[in-house]
Picture 1 (cartoon, rainbow, N blue to C red):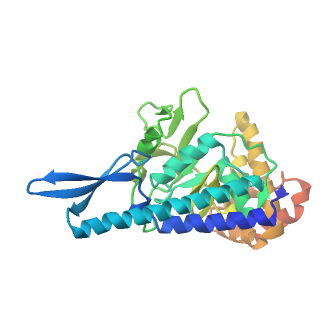
Picture 2 (cartoon, rainbow, N blue to C red):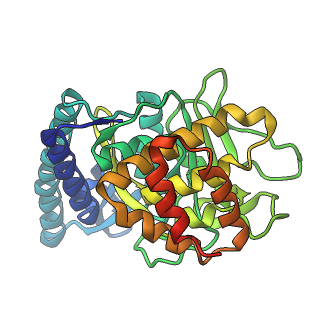
Picture 3 (cartoon, one colour):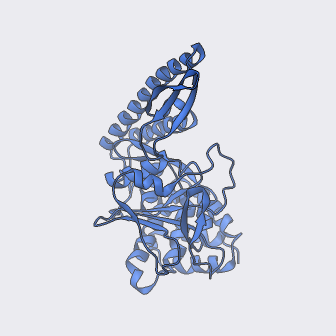
Length: 349
């Protein structure tokens, strides 16, 4: 990997802080739309109709046509100006990050991920996994990866139950994809009776896959995730990734705040998964090991304790997981011998 400059890392930290502040302050003023007055029975009332977007067009009741309601609408205008200024600052920071060599998400994928975020998918616990998460982790760790990163497969993972109390309790993932007007269609599974867990744009590489932790080796049937109004494909070992997500900016022309796995857990998970790949998936297995190696090399230099914490968490899992990890660690390049020794020493028998 190549180190990003100190200036670029500082800009990224500032972008992260601003996006988190915007997310925390998300309010009525962040909605695009217009006020409309309606005559209802014996009086006039004001409503606010949002612009059609990832969450669809919605109408909110504001109040009767009186002084208090006028004050609300005036406050909206002021807050809207502040929100636009904040977004302009985010775009300025992103432009500087692009010039500084930050890792970028391709435009089509960034548009889809931004639409999902706008619909609240990440606010209800979804975590971005796969190569797009790997790109975001590069910026988080202040490096540029050497791996080939061309993909428009967007992998989202979500637990079956939301364990964190959040203001928003559900998001409509299929509706959010449909609102992007890109032509996303459900991808039928092998069993026509099972619900679809993937969505794809016909004739293009854009694809969204929804995953959830398996509850056993034989748990491979799609399951419903009610808060996302979609079904997900169970995947073994996935719960290890979802326990400690990190909110990070995904950078393109603008930026989107997403959840990604803890970097050390991501690397160890990549190694364990690589050993489970089928013969026809050996290219993907090689990519898994390459991404794991690059992250572990960075963490061993800069955040060695993070590796120890990830290993400690793995010790709470079945012994078979650790056996797989030991086997895959042996395949890492000799340059990572010290990191490999650190991990092996931390693993329980």
